[in-house]
Image 1: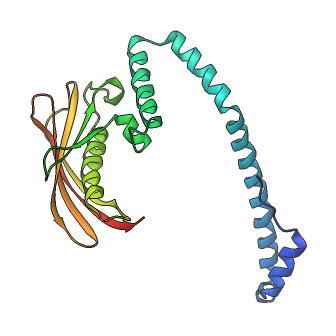
Image 2: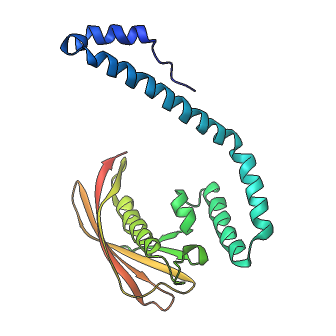
Length: 216
């Protein structure tokens, strides 16, 4: 839906009322010029956006069909994992698309340790055939942030304020598991630590995070 812009006469009246025209006559020209440029750009953006919104479902179906027809086994496996994650989100298994992308399995290991495990597949790897560092960082953030959110009072949430990560070993295997514990907690901030383990229970990365408590 396009915004109903006021006619130029109203804009001129507003400029005069604000005494801009008496401060400098050129302001009127620049104001009108900027006004029309904004209209042109906004209309172009809206038309393009509406086009893609209307065509997106049909285009996606056609693109998926064409992609699957020529897909390699590796590409099919990655697509299968992505769809499995999206299906899980639809069922309420994951809180966000990031969670569905990682297919996070969350639980309390004990009274102090919050744990998140993710399955590994080719879609999470870098060109060196190991887990991308950004995936490891997201796992740490999700686990430490998940712990912070678990212990905030009702009606409150937490957002990442700062995070530090040290990478020790390459991420390989079937799964990665991250454990997190609280270091300190105040009324406004929670500091946590986390460690990421591979299938052999070796630490491949560790980090700490500060999370700011907000009202929901």
